[in-house]
Amino acid sequence: MDTKQSLAQVIAAAMERCSPGVEGLPGCDEICNYLEIPPQKEMGDYAFPCFKLSRVLRMGPPQIAAKLAAAIDAGDLCEAKQMGGYLNFYLNRDNFARKTLETVLAAGETYGAGQEGAGKTICLDYSSINIAKRFHIGHLSTTMLGHSIARIYRFLGYRTVSINHLGDWGTQFGKLIYAYKTWGNRDAVEQNGVPELTRLYVKFHEEAEKDPSLEDEGRRWFKAIEDGDAEALELFNWFKELTLRDAKPVYDLLGVSFDSYNGESFYADKTDRVINELREKKLLTISDGASVVDLNEEETGMPPCLILKKDGTTIYATRDIAAALYRKETYNFDKCLYVVAYQQDLHFRQWFKVIEKMGYDWAKDLVHVAFGMISYEGQSLSTRKGHVLFLEDVLNMAIEKARAIIEEKSPHLENKDEVARQVGVGAVVYADLQNGRIKDIDFCWDRVLSFEGETGPYVQYTHARCCSALRKAAELEAAQPDYSALSDDYAQELLRQISRFPETVREAANRYEPSIITRAVTELCKAYNKFYYENRIIVDEAPVREARVRLTRAVKNTIKTGLYLIGMEAPERM
Image 1 (cartoon, rainbow, N blue to C red):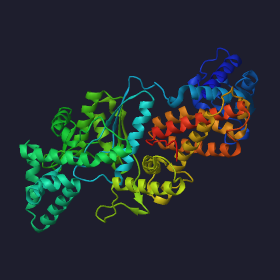
Image 2: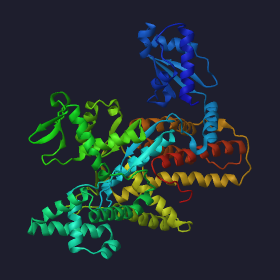
Image 3: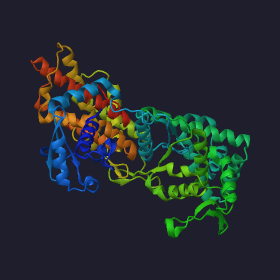
Image 4: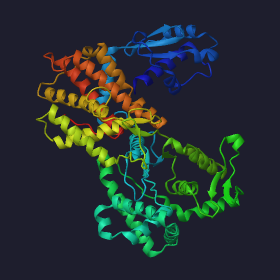
């Protein structure tokens, strides 16, 4: 049981003693949600606002706080004081240290995990790379947000289904087939992969400007794909294989994998069901020759959702609706998350509303997890302007830069290449998941790879520092810990942050916000480094040393778990 739950039980018992039989009093779970962290340390470790009890108890908040403080007897856990309309708690420092460390060290690297998700399924749609295009840095946020959120939910006992909804449908693939058959050859494509496909695609558009009839050839070949033509499908599937082969080194570096690669083409033959159902339910109307679903713009603020274009072809929304129906029937998800940039907000709100109008109550379980854009050194990324960073290049550059820093700072370090990979990739991931996901990111090398301040290398270095202290301690004789050695403010701040980690994980899950864990781990590292400079770990007094070693081990485990949840590795030497 964590500290907040223990305090909630104490408060609930005091309420019962003060007001026996009164109905409408909050239970332990509700009290837990009310507990706050005071803005100043002098005001205690936790505070309970009594304002919410005024109506039930027919009493002013200060009077309620005073009455509860007098009724609480929990000296082994805390001291309770009334401060205005708040009941403030000062934890018993020795016991707090003992209970926290016993809990954390017993759990090991599973500290903070849970089973509240047992029997529940979360589908996550993220990364969603485009066929025949290289994996660029613009895909970093969707990939790492989705990967981290999936890890967080699995940590809490959920079954997760990670889906890479490939962008593999549209006339561009007909154009690519024509370009390959006209100007390409198999050996060049096999050898150079996606860059060669990109060259052919650019060639098509250059030639189409001279001869617009080539556009008809592109449409003809895409129609061949739709009709199941053997040659067209063979080439189409080959292009997909080449793209996934090109992306694999990037996914491997990031530690990312998927349960499904079903993309748009997979749902192309499933859209008839959507269209027929919309017609049967009299939801389709004709607007300028196109088929749309009216969303009552005055009430919802959304224009009609386009389902079929004038020429009868489907669009993204049609296929997304088909995909949602398939995923619900296949996985029976409790939630389906779409990790896609905020520019697509209207698109998702529209087709979510269509699902609702179709009568599916699980429409409420569809969630658009939006995120901001990435710029590089102050420049926005643009394919047309040539401001493009391919993600594999970014990761390899980060690894090279990390290797150079390691050579300078730790020339005798073993496994330099492995550590450089962990630090370089971790620096890029940290930079992406450091701030709230909706914020735009400016990618700057000097800041990303710094060993000081709030960066990935700084956090990883703190973990390595903990490991170093533990290695030294392992050579000395163990003893029973003296937890009174952890009563100073630096140790207590560390313990408070560790004790809140399970709550941090759940808040990150509830808000689909890995940055909450990133920030918590960063603050934990900052607190540990302050403690480290103020308190020697390896001291002669064995009981004191053992207490500080146990605290260091708890910090190390919590950092490693937090880094794992955001998709980073934790080197033991740096």
